[in-house]
View (tube, rainbow, N blue to C red):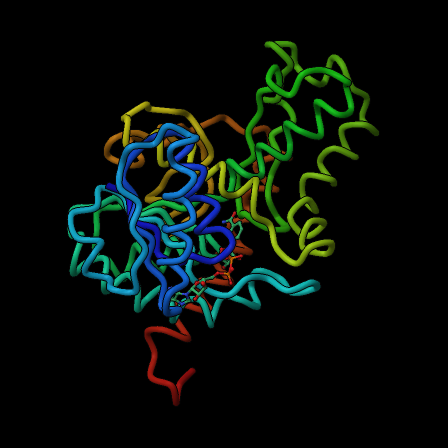
Length: 313
Ligand code: NAI
């Protein structure tokens, strides 16, 4: 069973995507009275058409999560136009802390997927507050960035999006690092098919992709929800998929005590292992900058807002 905490735009769309994958029964939890119940009822009525025979329940009772194999947290505030992910951190950290308490209480053996932004810092907060092993707490961000990267490469080349492979690592935010040297079209490096100017344009579009949607419609929904479903499917079915996942580093890539996106094998136990790539000096420097950016947000939210008495904050 999967529980999703936060039945807002992303949580409810993610639940519907997961139903489409027929991955698992779903419990949707939200503090807003009736919202989760209404979403679940709406989806249940669509279930015959998408051939989903499992359970879909909406509630504001955290106890209904009991026994979930995977808990996905999409609760919290979203970014407003012009607002950085860092601005969100302090408010959402408090929400995440309170939710993690309930997760530990009702699902002590679960895997915990963070979606709430800024997702790397929220993954750190969830890891620290849960006391879970690090493989069980991970964040969704880089796969979404990668989906966007792949879309823009395909658009520039005029080829099928399906044939594009690539990776984005680092912060799910402005300092993300699209790995140009690792991107390919059916195995052909994109550097053989695109010139520097075209690649720069793709990287820039990838970096601004989330904000571009937020500027137009106030939030991102479809792309994140389908990525959540892909990750949930990888965990529930133990598929060992290789993807960029925010995870707590203990020396990998030369960093410790930070949660940030790196390539991981995602399976039954959550992060089964971290894949350590050899980065060229420029990419390494970009990744270092990204780590510094996430560390700064963690410092402001976890160390200041959550763990120190208010008078010191
Ligand atoms: P939304 O405002 O539509 O939904 C948030 C929901 O959380 C609301 O229904 C609210 O009642 C609920 N909530 C708040 N506190 C709660 C609590 N303590 N327990 C249970 N439910 C609670 O927002 P939306 O658009 O769904 O976004 C949710 C979060 O996901 C935001 O932080 C957003 O920035 C983030 N996000 C992250 C992405 C990523 O790639 N990691 C992509 C898209 C959104």
